[in-house]
Length: 418
Ligand SMILES: *[C@@H]1O[C@H](CO)[C@@H](O)[C@H](O)[C@H]1NC(C)=O
Image 1: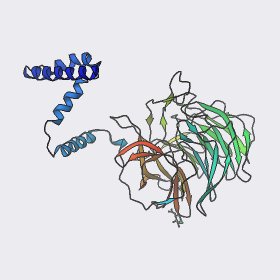
Image 2: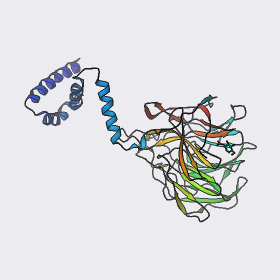
Image 3: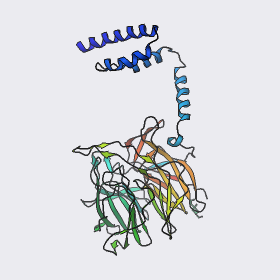
Image 4: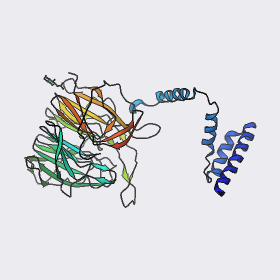
């Protein structure tokens, strides 16, 4: 009661003072001087003044005027965060995955999509595999991962039977990565240990290339600092042919969440970011706290010369795409992701487009719109159709910030530019 009354009298004082000072033209000085004095009773004068002024003309054009103003402002901002024009596609909703997943991993082998790990929510991580069968469009075959295997931000690649699972984040929230590395034999669904990476990495780019398992980039132990290191080790049929990892040419730009793809004896590293959320210092649960990331559109390529070459950039910066791609007819297709944060709100902005990098022409195309903007999708391709499942979707058509972690599975006919 006392607080309420106090507030009201302060409000009256504010209003009276405001009008008086307005009359003598000292508004600016007053705002500056009083913002401190009144903050302890929860009155933020500058914003209440803005509100009063904003509410003065209560006419029906208010919304339009506001819209026009917003549009004018949007035009002045850098456009990298905005949606791109893209063809509408016919989407078909399929059976949802048994659990929702963010930052999971997926590998397609023939008609099976093996879907691993991921956050169910920020405090809960999965430690099992679900399998989608593209032939009868059902989920099944759940089995556990080894207890020591990371739960998200894994490096992962297959030779068509064995899946190599390299390092990644161990535990929920913003815990750090483990160096532990495993192999799954998908003929028997049995696991074996593999030689740990020399140091733990968070979401490193991972591929098999020329008989060697390559791991590069990602973030260092704190999740945020980009790593440039690149290692490889000779492998065959799920086993290492060497005793230790070998140092390779560092990647030009480090950081997590990139697509790493081998096509026609060339290794591509696409998109990604520098920086990521970090654990709050001293937090016993490693609570995630935002750090500014820089998302990039860069594409780098390694060929037999073993020198990085710069390729045409993506149509916009794109990150969180490590398992969001497929190679179809000599094109790399990439589904969703995150782009540069909103320049004013600084909120993360999700991507709602599908991209094609045609390796015949070395050209990028925007080939379609997703049902919603979504990051860390897990992507498959079967019988002319592109599938995606899981990830974190947007708040709605008008708000590209991340919200719900989803289990949904969707498919559409894939139409590529020749
Ligand atoms: C891939 O190429 C084959 C053979 O030319 C063609 O029949 C098929 O439609 C192509 N697929 C896509 C998705 O473009």
